[in-house]
Length: 320
Ligand code: SF4
Ligand code: SF4
Image (cartoon, rainbow, N blue to C red; front, top):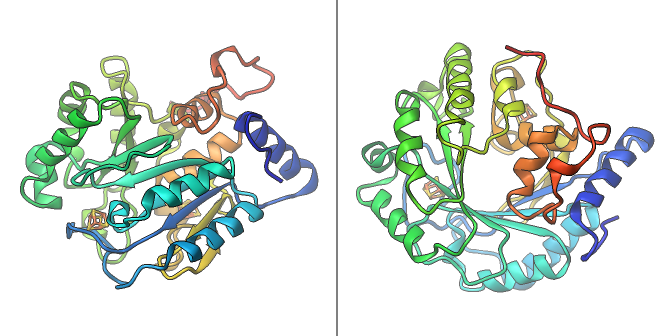
């Protein structure tokens, strides 16, 4: 069951947590929909693009959104390919929002962004200009900077996936991106998919990067990845509930569970991806992770700082 607006999505979160704890309800909460696999780029690490040539029609996506809603999701991430290739993108977004669900879009930031009621836009930025252009193509970093200038009123965040390619320049990335119009910077760790495994950081390297990010937060407050997530990176007791996630692929297939599994068998020991971990920590009501999700408006801007301590966990302070 989803409470519709104007009831804050935060109430949905509490309600779903109650149902999980006392009724063992493992219905999904967050959906990721791959509305197209067309894209103008061919990034070195991409495992998805151009595997399906034709897009499903708008009416079919509305049916899929209905299913996602009925299954219990109250947040939808629009992904691709590059979602802006769809001429009916604004209709898909409106349909999601009319149902009272939060809506965030991923983009490579090189094309015109939609004038639509999105709660946030996450733009992939893989490093400083030189690094980003090596991964995504010459000139792509500057095109993102122009997109940011043209859309300064929008709630836009960077998403940087750390790997051997960019882990050496974390502070440089933070310094450069802090001076742009971004509302915040999110960090993620590359999963060792078979195609990209050579670039993946070792466990020790990931832990070092995560600690560096925690330290850099004071100097660069636009880093918004939660401490709880960063402290869980590389740890054997990290928690991930894959059932929180629902994935709709570009050919309309819906699966519940880990985002790795549609591509290959998952290995949680080597996974530190923020999608599953940050979602789980938010669901477990860790204060800083709930605050992270709140920044995208999808929890209806509850003032997390004023929530009493008995309602939220204080963070994973047990780790050094
Ligand atoms: S922008 Fe995204 S979908 Fe396009 S090639 Fe790069 S990783 Fe793949
Ligand atoms: S592979 Fe990663 S996202 Fe998938 S269930 Fe394991 S920890 Fe979660």
